Image (tube, rainbow, N blue to C red; front, side, top):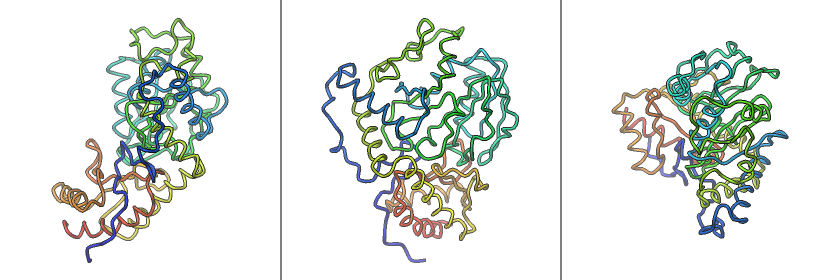
Length: 371
């Protein structure tokens, strides 16, 4: 085939940090807070605004709280595990590298003993019928490195005795999530809305708050993990008073993304944009036998971190990725280092469908050049 001539306006397809929103500019950010204390009235107000806007767009149930915490989604999830795990047995479900990391930390760092681990290969899901909701249950919603997601939360008991802990960093703002089924949810700014790194978001249900106030872990608790000193929840943490100093410019960047999301129609619009992006790749794959989805089952296929098998060896795949970069048509699209060899494209709501449409001829042309 002839070499394409039209290139994507935005070739940023990284799965984290993810692409900025369409029309993004640093000049759009509010800079009044820069050089001011995050504990000033203005600073706390801007942090609280990002929390309240997050609640509004996500449609969280009454009584659910959100806090801005250190160290991205990783920090948020570690904070939850170190603060709340221990009083019950634990069932862990994982099918990709980040979920495996949580299992490792629970068994080898926290050294908890009553732990069941249920796993599956990349692109597949474990058997969730094995979940015992008398225990705490831990899982990711979307496998960022595997391209496989939960199709729904029907398997989660409404009358559970334990807590559900969900790492939802590449699902929040892109998928329908049944909040009432989840007690601890974490995500980061740099995923679906394309914000900056370093800060995580921790969402707690009323049941999770009860756990924090009724249980004290046996191990020492680092300062940045302490949410309930002396057995009482620090409510200020969920009202913009962060434990340590946050980046106020990163918070303004997050607010910019939230306001953009609200302006285009909120959560439903973000989900629609992401699903349309996935459908363009699905149509392409259906017409080419040298590329396939790592998640073969359409019902569990991620619409954000979309992972592909390519009929190329390691060296030829490296040439293809280098070719994309040289032509400036797709950056950072190699599969995750611990995942099967292939390609991974971010399809969240900040990606314009037109850019995927413009890239697909380059994908076909590039394959023909290196095969």
